[in-house]
Length: 323
Image (cartoon, rainbow, N blue to C red; front, side, top):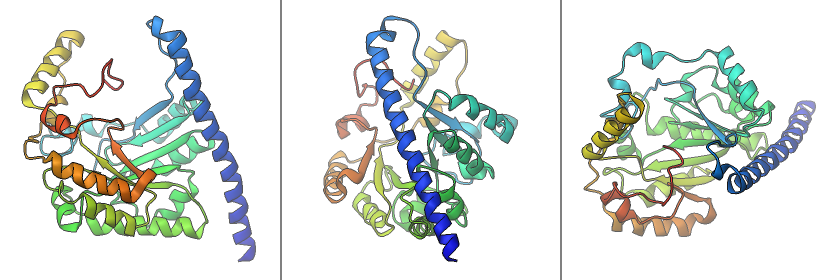
């Protein structure tokens, strides 16, 4: 037993050294990219290689969350052909992608659908980590159970888990066969495994996406996050649009690209019942309680009232970085 523990600790030391190296690489790459853009590429029609890449490893998901643009009430995957939705790369194809991508891209973000719906997702994480990439996963958290040891040992740097309020609210918004209890149990199991292996990674971020149903439960959800001992609590303001803006964007896409996009209508949601003052009041309290361990998305300063009541107005000047 003593030898096994010693082996774990030695492995943790080596993993720690690798993490320092890859975080240094990520910082250096970001710095060089900013310099290249400011001095050269902004004057050309070319861009340097990206610092981050989002991998949509699957479109399938076991939940039908109301606000989701993929499988929600107006989700785009509800109207596409089933064969199109289920068409995804094999393990070997993703390995080939990663072997090329990690040579120049130091940050990989795994997305879905629900990434853990793929049995090989942690195998892909392990490969990316071994090749020097900083890697994270965004998950609904319902499939974490019994995977904690494999998750910690995979080299995953961070994991973002969704929870949209206390049980009675979360399970009303995030519809599926698994709910609040499954997610919180999975998080507790992962936290316990990190402690057992004396690992700080993956950093666990609990994110709450604001909806009409949960906008008055921000403080309560933050308290739940604290009781779960997660590393970061985050509030996402959600992605939405109006029917008029969706129609305009679709027409523009048809004119410029000759394609009929299906996804704009998927984000049409009525947000008129959102209460900016109530949200701002709770955000102030949560910021005070969590300090630097609190995040909000979009990760920029903006007026909450503007965000919900004037979606036609850009939040920032200049070109969109994620068109």
